[in-house]
Length: 329
Image (cartoon, one colour):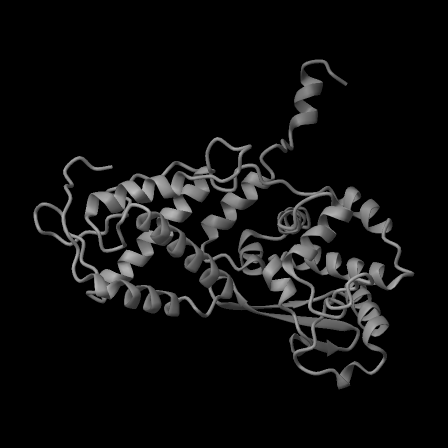
């Protein structure tokens, strides 16, 4: 925390609710972002209420409360939150004050009377985070072995096989996969083209599936919906619950948690590892960084470069030759 800042007041407290409503409305296009932002601002505001304060309180209280909030962990097995989580919480709250200040709803001021964002990186230092630290990917032979264990003679197996195939082939995020509906499917000969709407950054991404994966997806869809797919409604989900012991959930769109459990069941890993695996397989297939950037939907090529380096950081193409040079055959 910067030493030159002192407590001061912020303008009209009646503007707090208006600022929150307007700020959340700006981020409504992305459901995932909206939920994350809403939860963060509500939790931080509740923390201030416990102090008898609100989001329009003095500068120093906001700063100290935000640092404590960003550091808090409810997990008894973790002494502290990850650096990335700490930074993300502060970034969200900083974004809120940027919005409120730009609309003159909240105007935090320092001792010199200058309007400042109390959660800016200049006033509260962010923790250093190594980009994509610890990311890992599945080996191709492991994927083949694990997918072969799926019983595709059963309806459940057909669904899970097709779902994992699409995840591994496209590298799409979990929320993007679960949002797929029949309107996002195009049949082009023997191939299927999938359109993913509202991807990160509110982008629309399109993936043409190879014949083999298109076949797996069609096998599942025909098995569940029948041979006349053209009659399906636009909002028909591609992935549905097949829970015999819970009739209320039967046939409803498959949720995020359910897909995570499918990945853990067959791949023994978290869903996002399928995106890492896609990236490393693209590298092994000879794709260029701009090509990988385009498929992942990254804004910056530098981001893709860091991502790719981290995924291949343990690989030394000269390792075998080095071992031979020092006498190891």
